Image (cartoon, rainbow, N blue to C red; front, side, top):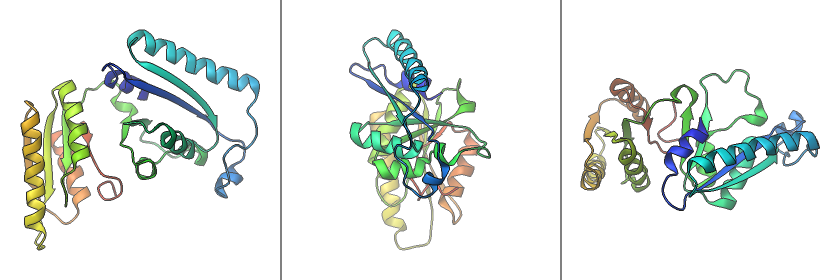
Length: 237
C-alpha cells in the first residue's frame, strides 16, 4: 500500500524513493528496556530473502518510473526507531507508512506511531490505511488553529493538483480573546489555497469544545479521504 502511494507521488523528475524494511529483533525484553538497536546478527538466509524482495520492488518501481532513483535498506531492530534513524539521515520530504485498523496482535517491536514519527523526524508522515488501497484522494480536510499552516498548504496543493481534490479548510469557533487572531489565520490559509489552486476550496467554522473530535466528525460527514493534521494537538483521537 505504501509503495503504491509512493509511485503515485514520485512521477516528477528527480524523485527519490527509499525502501526500508526492518526485521524484528529476537528479544522483546531488550525492547521493553529501551536498549534495542541490533540484538543478534540476522541469519544470512533471512538477509538474502529480505534483500531479494527489496530488489524485486526496486526493479518493479524502476520499470514504472524509470527517471526515479530507488534505494533499498534492510535493517534489524525496533521498527519505529529504525525509521526515525534512517529519516534523520536521509531527510526525506515525506515518510509513507501503511496501517490497518486492528492492532490487537501488533508486536511491540513492529509498532509504528505516526505522531511520534512526525515529532522525532520533523518530517511529514503520510499514513495510508490498507483499506484505501484503490481509492483516490478526492476530498482533503485541513484544520487551522493559531497559525498559518504553510507545510499543510504545500502538501495539500501537491495532493490536490494530482487528483483534482476538493479542499475543506476548517477551524473551531471559541469565545476566547484569541478568536479574532485565529480567524485571521484561518481566512489567510483559505485565501492562500484559493490563489494557488483552481480546485474547489471551501471553509467552515465548526462548533464544539474539542477541535480534533469536531474535525473528525466533519471529515466523516463530507467523506474525506485525507486529514492534514499536526501531531498530538490535532490527532488526539
